[in-house]
Structure formats: structure tokens, C-alpha cells
Length: 129
Image (cartoon, rainbow, N blue to C red):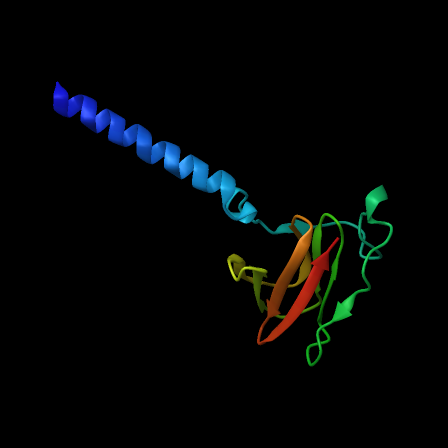
């Protein structure tokens, strides 16, 4: 009986510590980053009212088939052709997304902050504000 109670207290302590560290730690740990493939009009992005002041689209130098832009809600990536290796890092260096994206329009929802976007072998600082 004493061993069972000790084991139960230990289990509750571990669960409580894990919950506290997730709440206090990096905000990105609580929300997994997914990439959303956007279909529809090729002429423009669907934008909300709060996205009126967006950063200009950046064309990846040396690879004009890839461009991206940042808004308050996330990062939009356009890939005209080919397969590109995409990595998204938090300012702390935590890897948030890693994958190969092919032709299409994609959206990575993010929180406001500074991120590092690596497309193939080139890195870019992206500010979502």
C-alpha cells in the first residue's frame, strides 16, 4: 500500500512539473506548426482586415521560383516550380517546421515575433508583427 501511494505521488509530481514547464517555457512548444496548402485564386492572397500593412514579398535570390511574405497571422510562401527544403526556426533556435515543399502556395501560421526561414541553403529573418 505504501509503495502504491509513493508511486502515485511521484506520478502526479512528474505530470505537474511537465505541465508547468510547458506553460512557462517557450510559447512555441505548446502549438505545433503546420503548413497549410492554399488553393484558389493565383492573383493574390486571401487577406484579413488586420493584414493591411504587410511586409513586401521577398524573392529568394538565386531561386526566383520561391518568394515569401509575412503578416500578423503567419508566413506565406509561393513556390512556382521544383521542390524546396524549408525550415522555420524561432528566435531561440528551436526548429518549428522542417519539410520539403513543392509547387504551390503555402501558409505557416505563426505568432507575432521574429523567425528565421531557411529555404534550401539561404536564411532569411522574418518579422511577423
